[in-house]
Image (cartoon, rainbow, N blue to C red; front, side, top):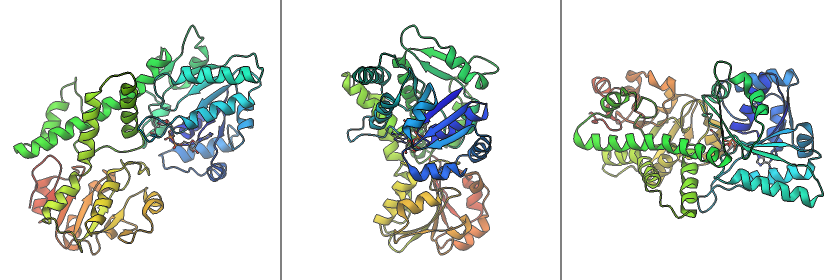
Length: 443
Ligand code: NAD
């Protein structure tokens, strides 16, 4: 099948590479010329395990092409995906400017009926608005053909995007009226070999499903963080509590790790957008509000521990920081807890030596010229001349640490852990003070 995808970010590019890998022919369109030039050389502009290999293989096989020409993209296929960003607007609602720009582009260049599939996370009613928008634009241009608009929200996770795309747990197809969904069965057949993964519903339910899923996951995180803060005050250990509740199959172990809060491009913006949607229909979403405010507070938690340890005086202190990305296996620093901490440390007069396995270019882009930040090449180098160590991302290779070296290099022999990757008793034996989340501090 010929497919066109508008947007070559985490969603569009991964989807394109996976659809090409199973044999479809995919044309990717982006307005970012540098990105397209890079992609044509087989270089991925984002870090995602396995993505670059798929990109190169399918580029070489001629199943993947990249262009900045919207006309070429629209002409290439009957099936067109929209996978552009839907960032927060000033009032927190989803800014659909890019989605509607793509719709206008399709209406401008289409010479036949198309199936327009919206993968961008968009508020309830967007597919219906897109359909009306396209119909009006086509009527103005004197075209008689009809566009089908489908909501097909994406559930991939950054860090395992390729795996999630290749083995999706479900594929939500939101269609209105009595529409033929055979096209979707054929499109997604390679990803649903063992059992039917398509869940077909109306477009409004599909759109709400995406927001509901992200809100549920964020709720789990804020819930466990609330319990962690209580555990600290009550002399309980959140790691024990996590194991205790996770073993209940109704609760499960996923997404109940206490830490320094969620970040990334999706949870914060999608929950905010759903709050705006609720307000528009006169509903006050109390739970969503609480989830957001618990998370905002949690992002300051590590700084509060640092502040308390140093009695509020951080001037002249240097902190080694392990982890800048909002979670492991990604270079994405959007809404990352590291950004809150960096800015708080600098405001308090401290300096930072930071290392992340993948997010260094992004950190350089965001803060490269900050006088109180030194970006270094390894986790060990971050410890040089530092007083304390802070861990904010649970990258696998941070989990095994040379505590002897940490003890030797840190001036103040103290570790602040925003992800609970170490055992408090172990660090105490090594002569290090240790501040985890939701567990008693040692030292
Ligand atoms: P992104 O910011 O990484 O990429 C968006 C791309 O779209 C950019 O390359 C941009 O240049 C391009 N673009 C913007 N306007 C365009 C236009 N008119 N024509 C062609 N290209 C254009 O975004 P993303 O993270 O891939 O997210 C895309 C959508 O998918 C968002 O709505 C997001 O909420 C949703 N989503 C993201 C994830 C995730 O983990 N990142 C997961 C599920 C859903």
